[in-house]
Length: 320
Image (cartoon, rainbow, N blue to C red):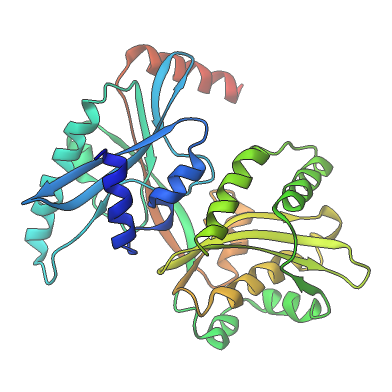
């Protein structure tokens, strides 16, 4: 049995493994590279895993985030009622083992966004890795929709009430969503950064596993104001891709589309993850939903001096 086959069995048995680390999601998202997984096992039981996406770029072997995938990294099956001091030594033993396996892959560069449930990156630091803290925004306990709405800013509440006549539409096809998103970006002189093939792959997988939906807002003249593709697991929903027509960006459609998605998943999961942003105005918008700022880690390391130099040169040119 291959590591991937063994991992598929584990994912089927462990719904607590986050959606973006599930084997079926990696199958769908890694169409331009390959994915595999490292295991930490004890007495024949899988205790921890590190799934990874590996690709080649300009002759370099790179582990990076799969496209359209917010998090992956390490998942650990913790013992019940574990004392804190034992937890730290438990985590260090696991990470030391997985890091050794990772470095045996002989890649040139490594970079992964770890799920926000992963809070102890110190063993990576001791092995020479770097960490950048990023932020997402999460609404918790979404089953209580009245409390969620009450915690919205006044402006957000006003936007939702103002757009009460917009129709919620679940019939928008994946192809039409991609076309709409492309058109919205084109109107802002921007290009879409993911292929239709990739989108259809992830969308079809999410629909097959009943873990995704496209929601759209239309007015009485059937004009498409906004659309959102979101996915979910047992613990959280994730706002994966949103498209807002520039003509309607100031009418509150961007607020209402998220509110309708939250209502849709309120009985399916526990939280709603806006997937965050380090862009100031986007972060402020998510804060106005009453969402909690939540840190997550990007952990990276360059194993190749040549790659490090070229990466630095590219960064310098990009800022000039």
